[in-house]
Length: 193
Ligand SMILES: O=P(O)(O)OC[C@H]1O[C@H](OP(=O)(O)OP(=O)(O)O)[C@H](O)[C@@H]1O
Ligand SMILES: O=C(O)c1cc(=O)[nH]c(=O)[nH]1
Ligand SMILES: [Mg+2]
Figure (tube, rainbow, N blue to C red):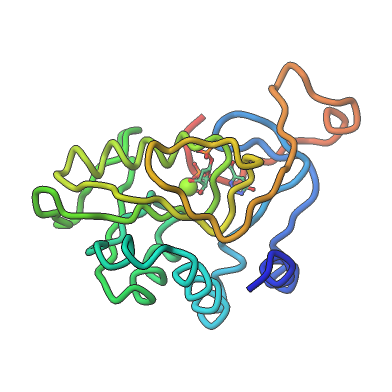
């Protein structure tokens, strides 16, 4: 699947949004990739995750024995990745503000894990998820996501395999271009402000 094929899937799902968005990091952007819309169609979710699994090196794939994702955005895509890899899926969540493994999910000490995100912008959520997975005993050997919108600058501390890399500008709240400042801002994600 080429980058254009991936973007065509996003376009077909009406998931390439334009406007004024406040991202999880607090940064602002005129573009938002709404992966929840992409994942609404389970066949589309399967196509994208199978394409992503095909890009992960065989020696890493052979070692992965669980996929763990940060909720909410990572839950569906993590489950679909686990299906494509033939392993189990779990998620970390942050009801008190910090990611933790709940719901009876358990990792064996040293269990080798793929951390799966929907979108990576600054990588903060991914790094926080990795800390939570390792606090629960897991060992994150790679990260993956449908989209890396950092322009390829992000460092997760482990090999990172995005399905598509985009370079989408982001702005600090006090450095907004005038055209963006003129539009009311929406905050689509679930991280508390
Ligand atoms: O790389 P980052 O700068 O951390 O941004 C990307 C994160 O932001 C979004 O989640 P969000 O916190 O909005 O919550 P959600 O997953 O519940 O939608 C997205 O699902 C990633 O987890
Ligand atoms: O950084 C984010 O919060 C973010 C950006 C984006 O394009 N899509 C998304 O779901 N989250
Ligand atoms: Mg998220």
